[in-house]
Amino acid sequence: MAFDAVRELRVSPTGQVTDGSFEFTSRWQLVAPLLRADVVAGPRDLNLYYEPTSALFDRRGARLTAVAAGTNADPDFRGARGRLAVLTQAADAKRDQEITDAAAAAGARGVLIVHDGDNVWTRWTPHGARTRVPLMRVGLTDGTDLLKRIERHRTMIAFTGTPRSPYLYDVVQVSSQGIPRHVTHTVSRRNSAVLRSVYADNGGLPWATEQRYSWRPYQEYAWQQFPRHVPTGFTRTEYVSAGDTQWQHVVLHRTVADIDSPLDIGLRDTPRTYRAGERSGETWQGAVVRPAIPQGGAVPATTREGDVMRLWIPEFTDSGTGHWSRLIKAPGLPGGPGTASSAPDTVRAELERDGTKVADLADAWRDVQVPSGAADYRLRLRTSRTSDDWRYATATDTAWSFRSGSTTGAKPLPLLQVDYGVPVDAHNSVGPRRAYRLDLTVRHQDGLPAPRGAGARVEVSYDDGAHFTAVPTRARGGGRFTATVVKPARVRGDAFVTLRVTARDAAGNEVRQTVTRAYLHRG
Image (tube, rainbow, N blue to C red):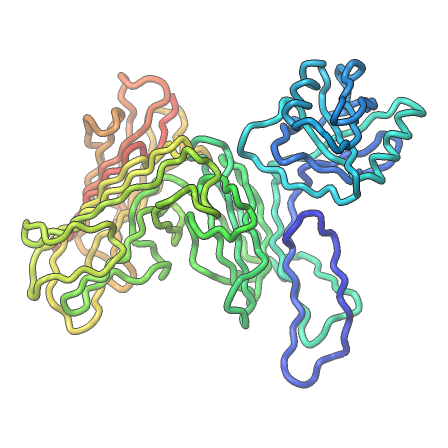
């Protein structure tokens, strides 16, 4: 559904379709209410919404006595201390900020404006300047009745709600070969999967943007589907329809200004279906974020075909299998991040052949013509992401060394990849214990056998890479390694950890990857 004011749809039932195929389907989503208001000992669930830039009531809610306070053109807050000031809509209304500043100065706990109609739907957004007290609007019918009630006797309103819904339902209802008289879809383990989704905090405003696209088997495009803001440092249980509906999840680490445009930037997974009763978990933006070739066919293989290297290496992957993102070049464009001060990501790459540079590249997402014959190559890829909304993996430097010769077809290049398992929480932080275990997996991209004779060296820095210290690393077989990281006694309090990992195999392939401020070690 496009708008959270929609509670029902009307559709005409049909008989059973016997000639050809027919399907009626609808898409629904549900979270806990952001705001609910009930008159104590009176009407429940008033038709009201927060204004887009409103401050929110705290998680405990509020019970406020409502008082009439004039109009939003000429408010009178003299009797509103500790109470809810109810204003009526006027044509020459003052600005929201001016009204709420005056209300806060008078000690009012909130402001409710009686709208001039019953359609009062608005969309609250988490970014931008906030009003000093909650500011809401209520429909004309409910608002008029409320003012009459206030005239007769003391009226208290109980406010509840949360911006941090512990659950999300992403539901696709399907009726085959006809539209039933009563369209009913009951979510259960027989038709749904349950996901435990972690949206990791990477700094800045504690909000991100996510969108889960859906397609039925006969659809080429996902349409009338929109992004949603989600808190970060946050775990949510998500119920997703199983079966032959295909889904793709996209998550951006910042809010967006245009919530009505599809989210086309940010980390994404591979389109997939879910099994009924499936239970799984996923973490978005979890450390360690770095360039890598994701598993599972999320991007085309990086290959050499004849004397052309076809590079498909995303600048950003995270701890989730198959998650990847390209760089964000222009954050101010429509559909892009809502924080105007955010700087674009940067990337640069270079390719060497037998120690001689053969190409400066804008990225590693392109075709590169190389000389015929076998040679030793080194591909270096550097990225940076610096903004108030991104505290971790602020810079990366990855160099792959490998040997390659002319091919008769497309052959995957032996670029070693490193996957990280760091015991971080939803804020990308390791707890205050001095020692912890860091797991590594050294692998090839899909299409190549596992590397033989792999070895790994792990180094850490607590001064953004000025000085590195090697840490004990133990091979566990199958390309897996465990490093024991001990925080030096001289490092006190919270400290960013910069990682440098060097891995090589028996064939001479090597990768060296440095991630500046990969995660935080709490003091």
